[in-house]
Image 1: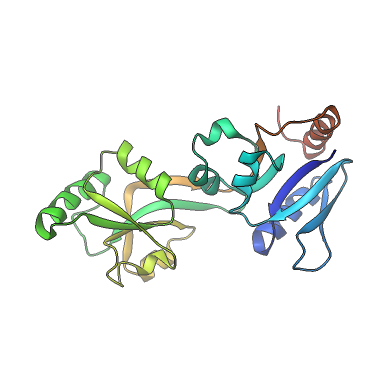
Image 2 (image 1 turned 135 degrees about the horizontal axis):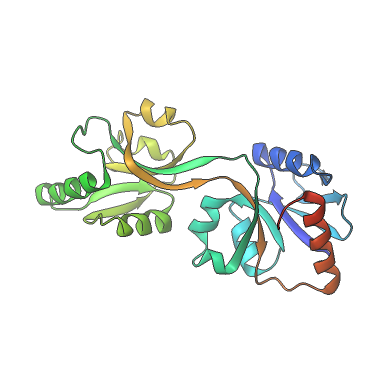
Length: 232
């Protein structure tokens, strides 16, 4: 049996993950062509590298089909209900930083906080007869955040493309989206609410709580943790 590690299959996340492990004595490498999702692990015996999309990794961890996985905190918390009972964060990797925020049109001069947004949403419904639309790809996280902060009279609409453009395209009145610098939001004449930080996310190494481990796999996990210098 081998300990399975899921890593993003392409792009900057894959490259930075390979660099992070390599700097700690564990070499990850893709085997075969770009279209093949297999890889090798050198530095710790008994491991297998599985290349997946970052969005697939939470599901595979929750199902116990992989033992470890690197993905964003935002994807784990959005895709997995009761996520902390299903996965355990082992190490934050220090890259892939992104903030999930609530933003409104910059011209809404009287809306700077969540309380202001709640008042604006009530006024919007009274005026237009339907709830204010907030475009997002992160329904679970945003719904829980707005509920916990007392914002009502809104509806979430799914954003399949560029969320920042939905206000200009008149398909939403506000957005809840991932940003790293805020430049795209500003370019679309949007401003972040002063207390509108839903989640600060970064790439993180997670362990599947429900994945069964043989004695050999448990020993491999212990060796990996020691080699990487993480944990207690």
